[in-house]
Amino acid sequence: MPSSFNMNNLPFGLLNEKEQALLRQSLAIRHYQKDEVIMQAGSVPEGVYVVLEGKVSESEEHDDESRQKHVFVHYANEDYFGGWSALKGKAIHNFIADEETVCNIIPTKVVLELVDGNSQFGDYFRQNLAAKTEIVEQHGPTQDMAEFMLAQVGEGVMSAPLIVEESTSIKEATVKMREGKVDSVLVKKGNRYGMVTGTDMLNAVVMDEISIHTPVTEIASYRLISVHPDDYLFNALIIMTQQQIERVVVMRENELVGIVDLTDVLSFFSSHSHVIGLRIERARTLEDLHTAAQGLNDLIKSLVSQGVKARFAMDLVSAMNSRIMEKLFDIMVPDDMQPHVCLIVMGSEGRGEQIMKTDQDNAIIYRDGLVWAEMQEVMNRFSEELMGFGYPPCPGNIMVSNPEWVNSLSSWTQKMALWSSSWTEQEQMNLAIAVDAKPVAGNPALFKAARNWFFKSLKNNDMFYSNFAKVALEFNTPLTFFGNLKERGQLDVKKGGIFPIVHGVRTMALEHKIVVTNTFKRIEALVEAGAMQDKHAKDLSEALGLFIQLRLRQQIKRAEEQELGVDLTPNTLDLQTMNKMERDLLRDAFHIVKGFKKHLELHYHLGSR
Image (cartoon, rainbow, N blue to C red):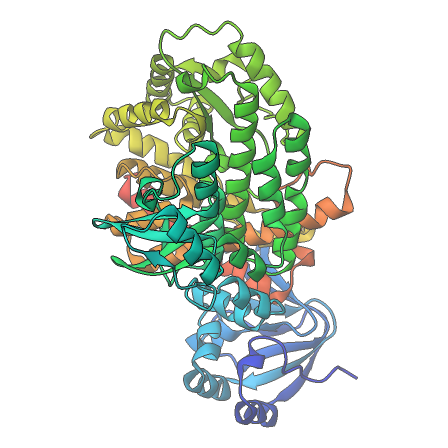
């Protein structure tokens, strides 16, 4: 006997008791023989079908002589199909029993009644990717952790600051801090707030021998980093990691409303990110730094297993990676050389979209005329040390151990000019990697000078943008090829989904002189610049986030299965291990990619591909 209808599965778990009772009363059960057509393209559907036993394929037929059938996806136990067809009133594809199959049918009239009466249920069936993703997060097994990670700064962690008068002395401030059981005070000088910590006072009195009667305004730091009360607490942790600070002030417009201390944030989170961060900051030798770097993969697994969205994990891990490279640079590069060179990271690391450690993509820009005989030797050892930290060498040798990627400022700008005027695949790839660069160590002014020059060089160069954008259309969107891929059970999500979004957005960002490199932030900046509609931007961000999340889960799974091996297929999704809900979301996301590629074709006059 077939199993009973499971109301706990999405989207049926979104219905209330009355709605679920209506659904149960309306259910019909049907049996189908192997190869029997359950629903034919163009026909009026009976309703939504839920598989109880067996297997069903969704396909279309080409009108050529071979009548070759292209299968989009297969449905098995507890999967549902036909929702979109029921809403449209006409079946959009053929649904055929691959083996003897038993289905429940929810009549179209009942489906429409439930869709109209339950907004979440309706959003899910209308295949709104953003709504579906939100529903999955709210009702999935990681709901509690997701809510936990989305806690905001103003939700209990923020504390009232201790503010003292401008004339308060170091001694008086120390007494007030002891009475208030805090380790910092804020002092207002003119229109600015300054911060003084217990450590600042100790250094001032003991190390600098300053009188305890000196006003605290004399030793206060006025370079305060602020967050908004509505910012995510997780972002506050990222900021403190990036800025190497232990507290941030909370500002609502120009009003000081609180302070957030690192210890309070850390007590709120269960991961060990702070332990790694502290190890990085305290590292004084290569051995110390190596120990800290080894903990990153465990941190990533912990974040993902606890339901943290990939975008949050990317931000934190990117900050950690940057600090590791900056610290290694500080240890290896002589102090007198550091103001004259700049280490940049490129590609996915430059965009802050690298989670699992992938290839090194880095370069050096140095001051014109610099004489440093040992530079290449130091860079060779730098690459070797990163390999020892778990960052694999770049297969294309795009790293500082290759002299081609160690350039003076003028040489770097010349290469950028060459790449932007060339149509060869290699030079186009070099340019795409380079324009995603960000400085992580040394003198960032060298990088900024090169970037500003490049932006100016592209002014009114429509031919460049058209040629550059064309690369985003290089790979097929795998919507009409699910049949072939399904047989092997694998799909390259980078070629089909991630790359077209990343490169298309990269091109638009260059056109509008947007300096941020992260794709999500580029999308937000394009909206602010009026170059992209808000709905389109949200769809692209949701699709990219989904692709990255699904890829990351499978990368972690492979890493656990091959502890000592190297993942040779980091961009491959195994469709056989994905449930119906994930396949639905994936297919919706590919529709968004297809629409975005069409937009690029029209905007950059690329013609039909």
